[in-house]
Amino acid sequence: MPRGPCRFLGASGAPAAALAAALLSSLARCSLPEPGDAVVSALSPYFGTKTRYEDANPGLMLDPEAPRRDPELLEGTCTPVQLVALIRHGTRLPTAKQIRKLRQLHGLLQARGASCGKVGAAGGRNLGAALAEWPLWYADWMDGQLVEKGRQDMRQLALRLASLFPSLFSRENYGRLRLVTSSKHRCVDSGAAFLEGLWQHYYPGLPPPDVADMECGLPRINDKLMRFFDHCEKFLTEVERNTTALYHVEAFKTGPEMQNILKKVAATLQVPVSDLNADLIQVAFFTCSFDLAVKGVKSPWCDVFDIDDAKVLEYLNDLKQYWKRGYGYTINSRSSCVLFQDIFQHLDKAVEQKQRSQPISSPVILQFGHAETLLPLLSLMGYFKDKEPLTAYNYKEQMHRMFRSGHIVPYASNLVFVLYHCENAKSPKEEFQVQMLLNEKVLPFAHSLETISLYEDLKDHYKDILQSCHTSKECELPKVNCTSDEL
Image (cartoon, rainbow, N blue to C red):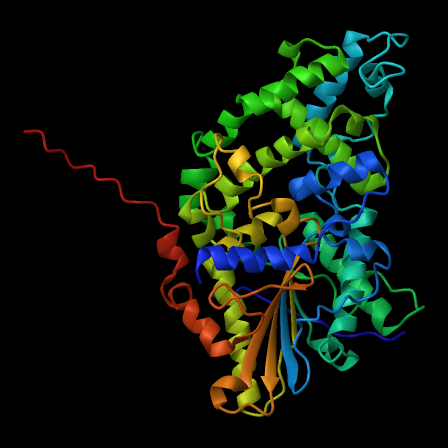
């Protein structure tokens, strides 16, 4: 049976309005299709970080294994010589915390003992009774694990990328693949599933062995790179453990938009408003998304909400991502400098090797992480930044915001850097060029709004991050002055 010896990656040491227009144009190429099932499809664009990849990239619904070449992708005399991909894990189960909240809500509905003969707001039998009888198949042990749909997300992504960049993903390069992952099982399993997809690409029809039996084995774990936020004391102290850091999230939960939904859901489920809170409403909404993403079913939980509700609940989720992973606090993005610099170290090495007419030691580098890995990095690079911050009080003003997490980091989302070598370059500076793809769509560069950049120009634009952003300093807590002026 053919095998390939993978090698692994260790730890490594424009104007806003114009950029917004360019990004909107890029996202427009990912617009959602006309809904096939009105209720489920109508809610699907608003699930935030619980969004299925195909809902953010709907062309995949027709043929999820066929590569979809963006017309902006460079071709001709420029040849791709290296690809560095940051990949969020595939579709997963709810976390144990989310499951406990769902069990609390399910128990509440069962305890109320809604009469089956009573007609509810949705017509027919009472929706609360239907939900009380709907199987609660989630258990604590599932705790965020990757599901078969998530493995499929990864296998299909591998097939598409390998077909899109055949020279990089050639069989000859298979032994030079470099993989790194977060320690979370859903990321480790995503990396393994991606390798299975590559096996299918190389040896169609031949069942893959267990990844543990492949010579390449599992991706190497590196949490300092893929979970940099867990290793940044300033972020942990000032954001993660700070009870006031998510003020706007908590304020929005008690604001008029959420309170209207609270009253509406209480009436629909025929339970007292006092028995519900924003967290239970949100977990009910996410249960609709999990049932859809994991099982492919439209559950009664989806009938609790309409599109207006979904937009509000999406904003609540986006507020959390904005203030905890995005532009809310500077440390959110600055903590990702280590990952950003690691990417450019790989690109620099490839440029150096090519200039010396040496083979590229790592043509493909695959890094598996989380939405929390990608969002800070994109914020560090200046993407999806709205003119005004997202707050608890400007929901209506932010209806057309750029920062929509479900469009940016759905399950299996991916940010890809492609380094090209251009044979007929007019100058040495033009010899190496770069493109970026977000979810397989070419992403305009923040500094030029163009879809391709000279590599040296890109490095110059991000020179502060590459040269002056040191994790040890960025993540260091301010020293407390213990001296006293009292006599």
